[in-house]
Image (cartoon, rainbow, N blue to C red; front, side, top):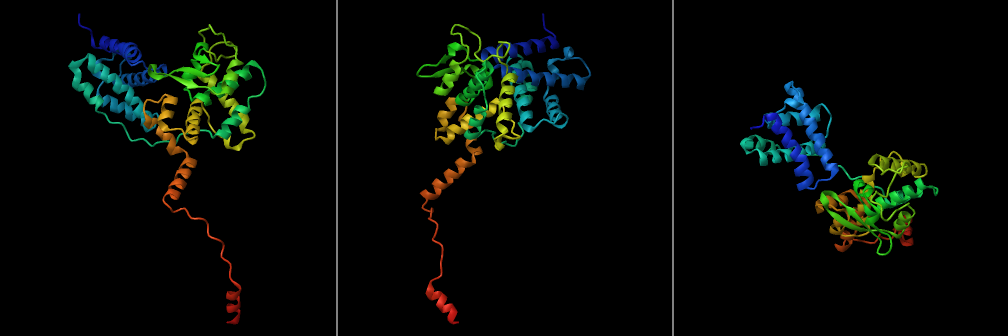
Length: 336
């Protein structure tokens, strides 16, 4: 029995998320949520535009002109940036590719969606903390209570590993090796795992946590002994940044998120002279182009590169001695 258009759309949406994204691509939950939100917004827009319920949507409704209207809507009405618009489009394109693989009878319809170009977006400078600021934030954790020990371990872990917040909050006792060689096994995006070394200070802070070697639960937990959430981690960081800002002016009016600590780790590695390809593997980037953007954001590194180039080119001159008039010159001027 042939499925109706609305049944086919529902079935393909379900297979897109359960089979394609999760099973085949191994997408992270963050990616799944982002794609879910993009498609949900598109479907709601289509229902408002056509004056019918979501349940009545059909495959024929997913057309390039409707997608273009949706993209214009989120920019003009919702105030989304070009970068956000491009992210929504990426999710819709991925879904259109899935439709094309399973519904070749509408190949031209889906091909027009895939041909929609991205919009040029203004590249924003990466936000990060200098090492001095990061040390001040970590030092702001005071006390020996369980919450203080957890907060210190969490901040050190973020800065040490440059882990994404989802990676850090998923770490379990079996992922840690706190004796030499100190390291952690991080479960990255798309099923890409990596090993990251740990500082002695980080390992010591992690040992202070109530870890149960046989437990499968995440090591970072809240006051109710439940796994710490993304919002919980962001709250802990913001609290200690605000505390450190009382004595450190450079932290005032700064919005510091866990991802800013990932950027801070990357920039600190660059400042230490670590090769970009090594940092790419350290952070788990898929492309070295993603890592290279940290170079463009650090002014101090640019100054050092310019100074090295100036000296290498033979243009580096020592400052000339200050000119002083000789006594003969003064005598001559006096005789005039």
